[in-house]
Amino acid sequence: MTPPCSPRTPAPTIYDATEMNQSFAWSAGGIISTTGDLHRFFGALLGGRLLPPAQQQELLTTVPTDGSNWIPGTRYGLGIFAQTLACGVTVWGNGGATYGSWTYAMGSQDGAHLLTSNMNGGWSDLGPFTDVLTAEFCPAES
Image (cartoon, rainbow, N blue to C red; front, top):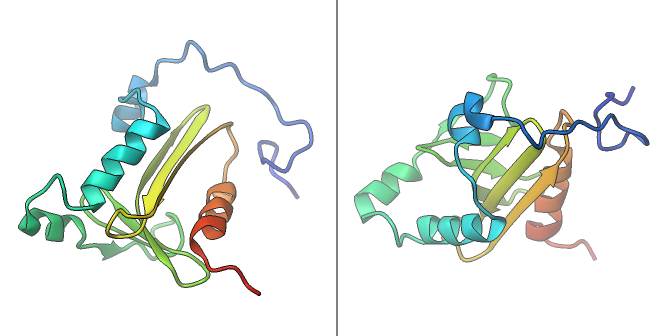
């Protein structure tokens, strides 16, 4: 059965979140930005242009999230996570969601290849993001 707020529902419920105060979500709702700004930030962060080498190494040190009921195939670090896609490619970055908005900024570990995306909606799974990441980062089958 398709959840009532799934992106695959033909006529999903629409919620007006225009006036919503996102501060309840702490850091997930504490920034107003654009996908372009996030793209530049994660390019600089992953590209090693913001932190000294020792801190960059700490940033990239992750722990498994298995059994945590979090995003499958991920390892979490100091403010970023690594997600291994079904094709075996691992992407790095972060994402967040609050009512009405989901954002992902993910890319290669060196920040040279990035994809930053935002979706408006209230669906309950990250399937569309995984599909977009797979299309961008996994080699096409011939």
